[in-house]
Every structure is written in structure tokens, then in C-alpha cells.
Length: 245
Image (cartoon, rainbow, N blue to C red):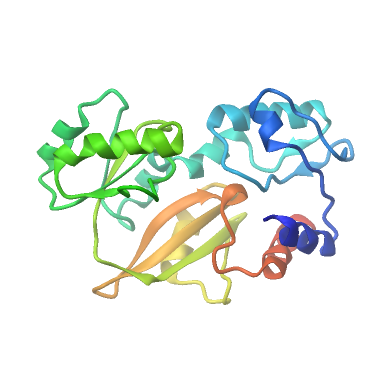
């Protein structure tokens, strides 16, 4: 699934090195193509936990490279509790809860008409989904998260449900403080995110509410964000403008 993107960045004169994600998760890191000593490495691949990303950074360092995004910056955009305080007025109200909390009790005390429940990274996108209307439904949701996700990363993030227009959602990328759009139009809310968030490379998902107000749905590390709505060649051109110029 990454083949078109690999070719696109090669066309922009990026060097490419590969490793097996499956082998890495079982403790083996092997590069299929070595890179020059001192090379800056931008990772593009599957989501990694904080521990996995730290391990990848260590392996890259041993191989003579350095990560373009360090572990602290990766988690700063990958974990909702770290970016939410900086954007709380631009995104749905959220409660951050620990894994050992009584989730049903916590939800019942909020008295919200509906709850969107996820972990620090992502929601359940299959089975019962992430939205519930009754606190007692949380037990099944969490069981299904563990079943289909394999783990719950960090803790629980309970988001207040707003009336979004799903067809209006768009993904933007911010590199070194400069926001980029697939259609060259960057809304003010993304410019504001670029002013507030310090990370070097991250994605911002924006959607319009039924009252016309634009809201931030999600922030993610740019290295593990899919090219939703983006052409591979346009994305590669944006990367080249920031990393190769």
C-alpha cells in the first residue's frame, strides 16, 4: 500500500530505506538498504507505541542516522492528552481518564447525551464503534476495543459528541510550522493550529459542524498519518520543499 508513495518520494530525490515492521515488533530490526552516516530519517509507516518509536529511534541512531521527529515530538502529536490542552477551544470537550478508572461511573457523572470513547490514539472503527449513549454501554465498548485493537494505549479519552458534517472532513499536514492542503486552501483554524502546536511534522483533521463552525477532529503524527484526500506526488512535493530545500 506504500508503493505509490515510495515511488513519488524517489521522484523527488529522497533516499529510501526499508525495514520489516513485523520483525521489528518481535525484536529484530534489519535495514534492507543502509543510509549515509548522519542522514536525517523521516519515518513513514504504521503507528508505533511510544516504546516502539523510542526503540526505532535508538536503532536508527545505531545505524548512523537521526530521526527528523524525536520521540517526545512524536508523542506530542500522537497522544491526544498532549495536544488537547493547546487546542481545547478548537476541538470537542474531552475528559482524560486512566485505564484503572471506573469508566461507567465517570461517564454517568458527565451527564452528556452521548459519548465518543477512544484511547490516547484512536477510536474503535469496527464492531460497536466508538459512540455510546448510556454509561453502562462502556463495558462492551472497552471489551471490543481490547479485542479488535489488541491493546488500549495510554488511557481513555471521552469526547463530547458534536453535530459534524462527515463529508466536510479534510486532512492537512503541518511541516516546520507551515500548513499544507491537498487543494491549496488552508482554513484559519489550521493556521491557528500551526501557531500553537510546536511539533515538526503532524496532521490536522478538520470538519465543519452543522452550524458552519470548523472544528479540529484529530491531530496525529505526520509520519503515521494516511494520505486521506492527498495525491502521493503532491505529498512528496510538500515533503521535498521542507526537507530537501
